[in-house]
Amino acid sequence: MKAAILTDTTKCIGCNECALACKKVHHLGPDEPRRWDREDGLSARNWTSIVEGPHHTYARQQCRNCLEPACVASCPVAALTKTEIGAVVYDSEKCMGCRYCMMACPYGIPRYAWDQPVPYIRKCILCYDRISTGGQPACTEACPAKATIFGDRDELLAEAHRRIAGTPGKYIDKIWGEHDLGGTSVLSISNVDLSFLAPQHPAGNAPLPKTTAIAMDAVPFVFTGVVGAMAGLNWIIRRRMKIQEEGSDE
Image 1 (cartoon, rainbow, N blue to C red):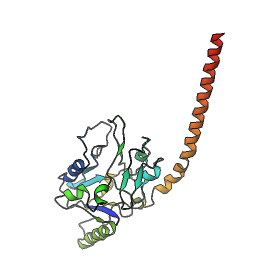
Image 2: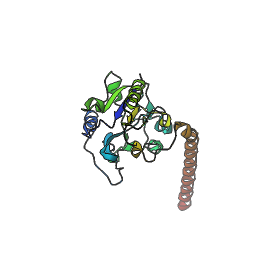
Image 3: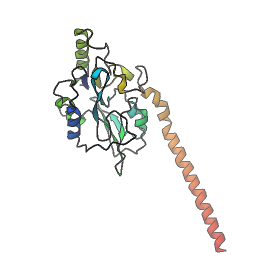
Image 4: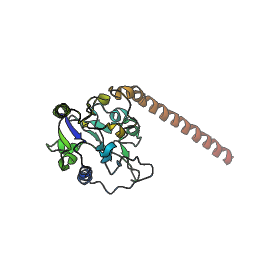
């Protein structure tokens, strides 16, 4: 099974129960807004949010858990991994805080826990621990309007196509996440254009990891070069200090 979420914005009532359930299940504390935060409701303590769109519609904002995630491809220490059921998960013990994933994500999703002594990346992981044991994400379980549902990706795509074909004129003829940048595990159908959720989203359906691969292949060599240069500089400085000490002794 390739797990996925389908959100139908025409059913969303903006109650925010999905976001509250996410915070409760993942033990996320009260948010601390900062002036540099994006105005999409996400933060290190908010992994999903409801964003008001055109014509008083509501849309979910969260990690798309891409099929070929750019964040995974950009991480030099494999702190982010794509699981067999579709969720993109994060290992804080491997993370070195480089924030390459934040720069690589075309949707601008990963957030940094700036207020923590040892900051980590935070984002939706599709409730991997729950779905891997037969459950469902907290957000889909909590939705009172069934605006967001959980299931197999292929089955949810079929359901989305049925809804679009069954009620002509109700939806834009597009499933967000079906093909975008290689496809995602978070799908949406809507009566309004959802591009406002990712204003910097690059065009096309080609997966971004193919673009980042060349740069990331160079990381080990650059890292080795930097380490070598720093070691050489350290030797020169220590050598000069030693010569100065010997001169002062004379």
